[in-house]
Length: 155
Image (cartoon, rainbow, N blue to C red; front, side):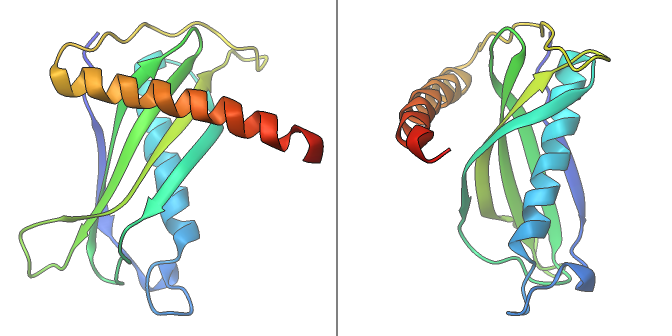
């Protein structure tokens, strides 16, 4: 199965603004979830639910009126889970180059009509970059296990 990136592109709007005059982080997080869902549902061919969003890193603010581009790609699959890498870029309409503004990994699980997890096609990396991204996802998965153990007494 071919792992084509899913890309969204649009202009940030005044309704996305925060009190500082930039795009609200919550708006960026919503876009991340949407492009991640599109990628996961394309890969699995079914409805998916978000089970984890981790390590969202906001590098620079996105200004209102900039062109925003989100790129998502499967970087690891489990039995029913898909780890999706998402990068968020933006640029002034007068510029040619996009700048990376945000990065994160989001995990989705494919579910049936009863909400029960279902199997997804296996993703197999074929390039050096894909192998690196798969290793990155595995490292983050191990770190999440440590974080979950630390959180248990507080849940």
